[in-house]
Length: 506
Image 1 (cartoon, rainbow, N blue to C red):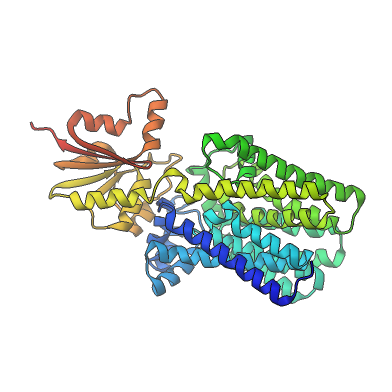
Image 2: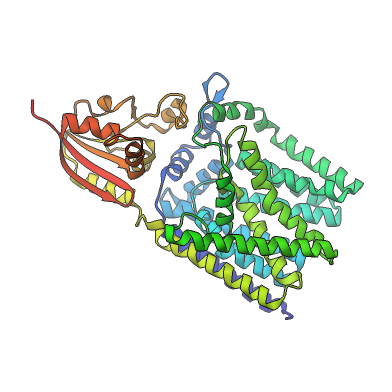
């Protein structure tokens, strides 16, 4: 079907509006959580505090935080204009998501033409993995924007041999690294494209552009060993198993989490759709059909970054699937190529389309219900506590994960959290960062409740479940409170548990 320029523009505008609508729904429906609270709290302190919180040496050769500052700088500027509300700060990521869509359209149009560009853009607009993280108050939308723009600049540089495009590639590659250190796991497979083509001039241009990116990154590169030491000393991520790669296939198609009864259909959708894409790509390669190299390249950028990240994580666990949003966006282009550019039999083409539509529907339905957690349970619990507080009351959080969102909602609320075991895998909020944020922690539950007449105790349901699964009757903090206080009330909101205790009379 021939599409006029006007029709293409109208269709793309419709795709953009659909993407914005889905992301607004996810933005208003999803729970506010620890990482998002941290992003706002550190960013609103200003550039000097951001650098201090990122670069302060908390221990010998160990930095206070592991993330570069670019997103926090950008969020700080955004906050100066639009404030610190959850909706306002999430809109920044939403706009970056619109930029990602534009990058994918331009990239796909350059590679495959307008029809494939529209289909790939539609995929990025609706796939639940993209929708879920497109409005999160974290750096991953910005990372994906820079990586997809770097990919477009790389292709334009490769095709035009213009140093202007290679300069844009160097700049956006460096900015991606300044946004998230894991950008390298995408950029290296992208740069290796020149080796596969074995074109001397192209290889030279790629090397020079890569060196340009490294030179731009040097001011931060010198701090990378200290940040890496932070990961090695204490970081919450565990070494990924093979199951993580299977989960990634679900992330690419239906997304996670899903109800248990949906897992088998979701696995079938993921394996069938990806198997069809692989088989069709191999068929085109075997027949040496025109355009098969593009298909192989798209498959490479969809699969190689997560595989490299998984392999590296067997040495030092750093595997975070949100860092793979750019690869999933390329996966959308790969699917568009498979469906429209590989002479796929109509019955298989429609079967694959239906499978993907059902998978998208499963994932979006879960986002619509906020994965079963209801509307921001932490906000509900904070409102209940604030309305019921009396003089002498104390709010105690079992850990920092519930504390930091509360601190964002009301920094004047008398509360503390029980700090992580020093040097442990969960000890990720360093003393230097705590000082900058102005948060209060206690070494143990006894210190946390000292002197309080009534205790409002907040804990995630999963934390209690972990203790029960280990053979304990209940969580250690709850056991202490039960022994020394009288339980007045207990309420649960989604996955957040709220207990009110009163000191037993002497």
